[in-house]
Length: 500
Image: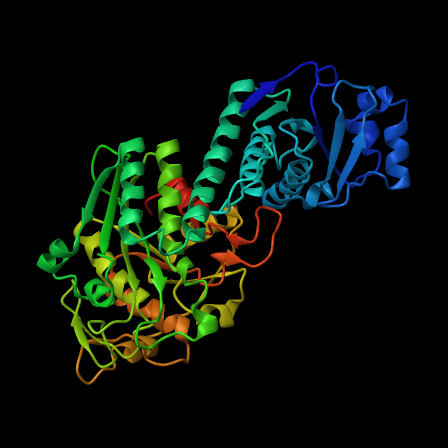
């Protein structure tokens, strides 16, 4: 897939050569003078006439007419050097790969050194950005349509040109590709329909990951959950003909099982809302209610590829939430794995119930730090829109590390408050320790705060991805549909984590 070269840039044949172009004076003369010479000054003319542009995210195509060995040049506008950020770089490169994908080309070269900025973005950064952007931007969910007879052409070879150390750059390309591929795996899981991705199917997928990456794995079935007393997860599953699964993956990157980060993902494979049924417009798309589980599985794929020196425990409670004569009902009282009793006021507030048992089970497995990820509430969309993940925490320094990881991944998040009065609303039940739905006011906070009742004193961050897990329009790094959000954030958190 990836090759790194230092020499023969303009003498090597390629279908297309990607070049970064900053919006700076004399940029052709300073960085691309040899190319301009081969074109007898035409590059300078193209820039003056606006045929190529350095404006951020502009894409300009030029045919070479045999002036160099590459057939085409694709210029990627990068804006001002001082202003360019890593995630903007990825987005700009993603647009270039989308353009190449449209042209049905299978082989690409990239002049990495035209994208670098001294003391800001080196060739290793650019290499990572190129491979991650390529992987994300060219992703497609093929679905279940009959295949056409026309052969598909995909980019399957990328040559990177740089004066930097070849092995270091190849390593950066490999890491970026791992991050993109793990995110795409999460996207595919979320895009799958609920009849094809059941809790059992998700457990089988986790077993494949465990086999490939030598993870320890535990899959609890319904009988084992009953024996352990996982009353919250089992209550949600009561109306279903599909058996529930508690999926546990363990990666040990240290000699001792300590400083364990647990990634807990909501795995509701389809959510009708139960007897608190969703409206017909709101029920479409509920196959995506396992976006948190997908992010955790995608992150575990990245972790399996890169093998960081960290201990990680993935816990995924999985079931669908259906309606039948045996389904749980409003006014029911259930007992969670922790022993805390819960009054059910809303059967559509099921995600926090399955996560309650998963959080408790993670702690029983030695989790020292907890991050739960869930498509939890419509309230977070009202509060923060569809491009920002909502966060709640009980631990400032741990949250800072999660926030830094999200910034590096380019996955925006914003912290919501959780005050003592909020906790009192969650504990306000005349018949149980907690109620699962204190009302519409501060809905996203109530849902996160409910999960916090089970995290208790363990450092914990809750991530509500209800708005960010899918998108209804294409963007620089992907198509419409599942985004795989938080996959890279979780993997970066594990890779960069420091005990503080």
